[in-house]
Length: 409
Image (cartoon, rainbow, N blue to C red; front, side, top):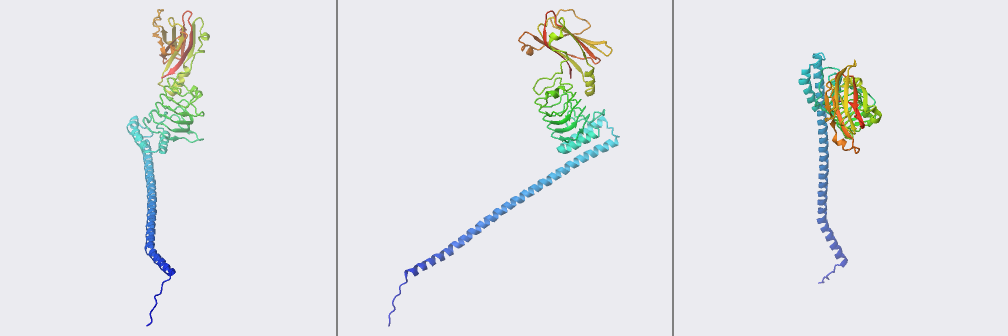
């Protein structure tokens, strides 16, 4: 029997066999792992894309909701305005465009305030124009709608290049804070105690407008605007951007707080504030007409009053005297005021009421040359058309900075 010889496996074949086993192992283990990892990554990517899509969908849905809500609110505001205009129009037609004072106060005014609270700035302008065109807020009618507490703040009224006529409109005690007014004619309009803080005026015409006690802080008047003969009595112009040239054209700035913080006073009616050029033998005399002031005030505030304001610095007030004699149209004396030092023993004119000088201690302390600052204030008689000023300085006395003006309140 022939014996079989044991064959040896070559080393190279052994290595190949081991490599195959390793590859089979790697294939069996790593490929599923890689497939699993790929599946996980793909799933995460899909989830991320899904989240992004859901976020986009939510954002689109939110925007659509906001748009729908805005459209709904816009429609509600429009309906509010239309309902208000229809209601007022029917009321005007039913009462032949002549509403009673009681109707305006108890029905129209509260309804106007309630409607304004529901409207945006654009529709507030439409409402305002409707009231003006219906002559419910015009000064031409003896009985008109009050805009007291009406909120028109932040409105944009007027169009550049197109003049909007709002003449003789009454805005008394309304709120127009931070509004923008462009190319509008407010001639003879009433802004008494109206809030106009931060308002902007571009080519706005306030000629002969009544701005008494108006709140005009930080307003802006461009140089094309007009305030000729406007009444700024006791108005607050703190921080306002208004030129001195414009202020000089106003009818009155009596008692107003000016942009620089000083108190307003109307122009000096003395021919010269220098006493040396005014007095003769220590006497100063001048006649001043009140007719123009009367006519001006009648156009703006028929119930307004005129006042005399006098001030000056004097070297000695012991003998200082001033008489204000008022005359009517027929040159008859209607009233007199006599001012003198409280310690004066001079002969008294029994027909002239005596008033004591008022002393301005704060300003007197600024005079380093010994001058004493005095002032006087008196109401002009309703029938007076001219006033004659007679000032007796006393012997060897001098004065400076004399100032006489016609003020309003």
